[in-house]
Amino acid sequence: MSRNFRFTVSYTVPVEELHRALTSDEFWHARFEGAETATIELAHPNGPGTIHLRMTETARQDKIPAIVRKVLKAELVLERTDDWGPLDGNSAAGTFSATSSGISSEMTGKYLLRAAGTGSELEVTGSVKVKVPLVGGAIEPLAEQLQHRVVNSERKFVEKYFATESGA
Image (tube, rainbow, N blue to C red; front, top):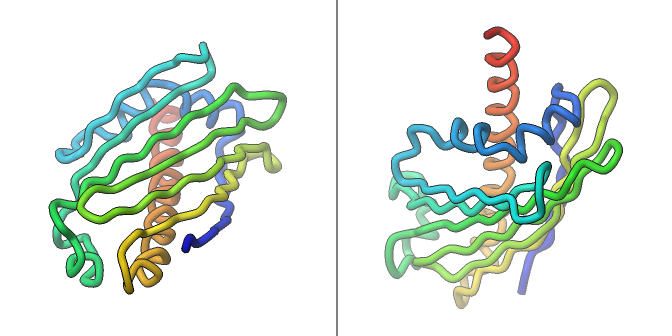
């Protein structure tokens, strides 16, 4: 069985500036600077104003919930792929997918970035499926929470990134 989710995150950054950052190599290199267990691959197969990101990260044992540690078969390695399309007026669409090794799971969904007043907002919709007998249903909400944390962490990074850029 899978679990569906939807949430929206607000940004103080105007949609044009946010989209420009989300589709730039510089932004993503800054985002993952110092992340010792993470790798990132960036490409622009659909031209300027678009991006394809592939990120992998090995989860630290102390950050893995106990219920997940009990069913892990190996190190927990998370792989995430994001694709962003061009800005079309005041909005841009994207997709994401994520899988993990060590525990069989998959997450897929869509992003909708749009203008909201003087800032912007990101709507995230998706589904997650954890393929572990008996406890998969208990782990799926944790995977959804992880997606919330990732998007909120990126929002905080964006706000700091733009505050630093404007102060430079």
